[in-house]
Image (tube, rainbow, N blue to C red):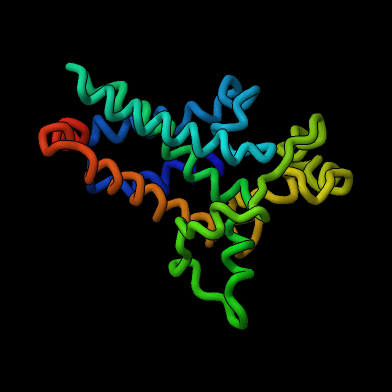
Length: 207
């Protein structure tokens, strides 16, 4: 998703759970995943190019780093790891066809975006789950507004350009991706709340 949307979702899901200084570090780490250094050679950061298993492994790795960091004297690296983690889980819903699979599972009138279940195991493990492939240079041209329609005319339907739900411009399914990403961000926070000792959790939230 676009950086401002990542920030909005993160603040909506976590703003009440962290101190301001902790939230600022988490937001900065989340934003950094979309820097050029995080775009090239790091499909697992964004679930691009069907890097489903690698993306899931990356989420688990960052969760482990949060816990390991909180066992050390400092806390900064825990916030950074959590910011990276939630960027990846947020991109899962905008870069894969999870939303489409969830909607397809409902016959008739689709439920409201707020009803989406972000962790349906059968969909996460479905053989039909896939993400957009990056076709360069056409997918790069997609991000240039006056060349977007030109690039879409040439890109395959399995491309990031066609599949992404990164902004409201992608239509109604963006709202489902956004709702799922916010829920999943809170879900990841709740996982850590259950795992961490009370002392580690207080250190993590900085409240």
